[in-house]
Image 1 (cartoon, rainbow over the protein chains, first blue to last red):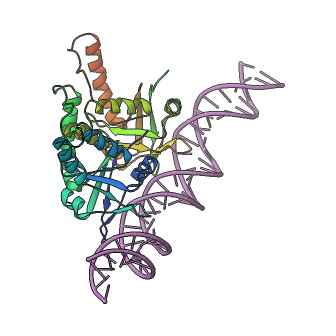
Image 2 (tube, chains in turn yellow, blue, purple, red):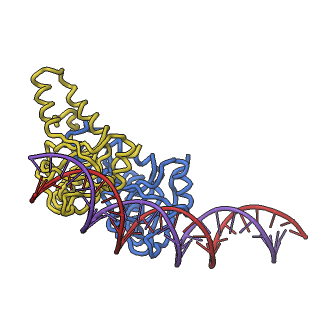
Image 3 (cartoon, each protein chain N blue to C red):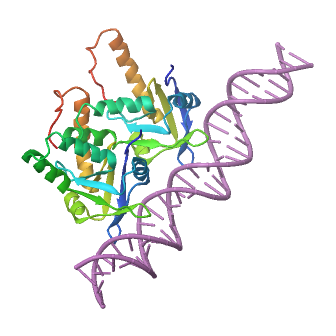
Length: 155
Length: 155
DNA sequence: TGAGTAAATATGGGATACCATGGGAAATCA
DNA sequence: TGATTTCCCATGGTATCCCATATTTACTCA
């Protein structure tokens, strides 16, 4: 099944709302999750967003540790504490929370980046920089220039 | 089963639409993908296009890494963020996005180049140059003049 | 064989539907 | 009650759908 693909930049209005790109809304509708699951990325200035597919990946991560252990508690606090569920209004818009705005450094435009099972929310200029770097690294990785990938690197 | 072969040059109309060559449409119909999956080539001024076969190659590349890791995020941003799914209208035409037009440097004509499991979208003159170079290199490779090509050439 | 006919294809253009965006009014909260 | 949020409607631009036409290719039948 097709996931989140391509990237879009939309404007933030005076009320702090921004349209979620229509193709992404279509994916979310198929996914079935009510609202939009958002979680600050631990390793870049972006917010991960998505539906059940994303939630499943996160839970999968937490399940590496037995419940009630200090490790699990810590990971759970880090993951779920940095998460929130945003409502989507009748016109397909979301209202950005302070957490999202601060973490991504957003001002008046927002870039949505498809990443198959989730998408990311970026400040446009920062995404440009990240993408330039990502493309360089991807080219190197895919050309077999780099050693074996890190299988289970922490989030 | 036969893939995408040969090349065709069609005209871009005032609305930015261009007919996908009928032989390519036949391959896409067999493939079963809904629409046309497009991704900017990382190493030349062309856009890769195709259906499930192409998507499978790309997903395969991303699966080298565990989800939610920095490596996977980076690769996914470079691959899926640079992709889009273009609709094909009832007459077999696609509307070129800005991304495609810019990346390939298109103006008023488009060359479609079959490459078996995918095809490429080129500006005609740039393709001529690329092909001249490609033929020279292919000849050298096939006669064993050059060292083995890089293992995992980017999608 | 060869003119006539039918089918497929590339291309043009009008009408309609969709989407991002702005703003007002009702509802909710502190 | 003032501020914020949620719901609803308006609008301009664009993409999509549908139909028309020219040109080529394939086919038919005398």
